[in-house]
Image (cartoon, rainbow, N blue to C red; front, side, top):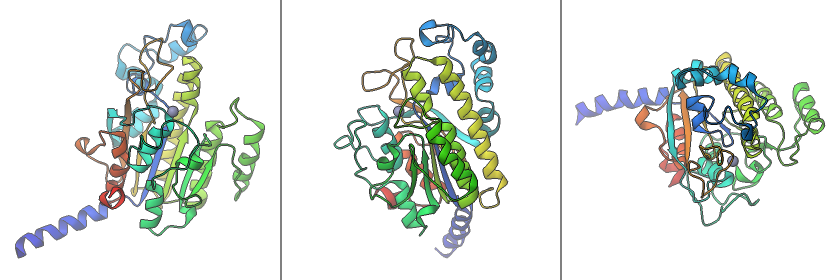
Length: 336
Ligand SMILES: [Zn+2]
């Protein structure tokens, strides 16, 4: 027994020291696994009905013979810099019955499927504690150390069970603290989208990056919205441009994390989406229980203590547990 203990202790200590000190989650609403893993979609790229009639330049920019080359052309930061450091899946199962945003985000953030309460996007406070609230408690963090920056205002009620427990900036919400934050906070009201519930991802990202440098949060979630908006508008051209923008932001985010001693080598990141969408010309724009493909999402996990391929979450509701394991925390403490 003594010998086994002697062996077990150093192993446990090694696993501990490897654990992530910071956790970052990034999502882009309804960004399809087809485009992330295969690049520009050959079925959509020539279609007027997908908004591609006037988009020859995008076909020229992103078309390549093989899917591997196409995805590298569309998402060079992700495939060139992040993916080599990541465990990746294009086949993670959404387990909620609805395949719309709130149930999906709730699965990601709470590790649970609550079809009994969250039946769609109706505004209601999350009935379950989120992984962010749990981490604030577990790590004894201040409210400012657990931050959510989101384009869609629904994150105000989706991201926490107990209102006010974490720092949420979602939708057209003001924030102040640095000259850059003050300016972006003002600009968001002057450069609005057509949707009063969701601001531009550009604002969300610039705010998040500035907050990251200023407050150095231990836990951060950045949630983009515009990929879903353009898909619903049947505009594959704009959806492609937003996907390329998501990619540039991922590259900038990772570079920012690597540039700061508080994050370099000690940060774990997960990147995913709230739901999938269809694969064909008549349903790629949509998602929901009746749309084939809406029940499959993609996932990347990278950085400190990244999981093996086998350790990647296979269901959307296992993503929170996977992130906790990266941080050296037994997920049973969270999900019970
Ligand atoms: Zn969505």
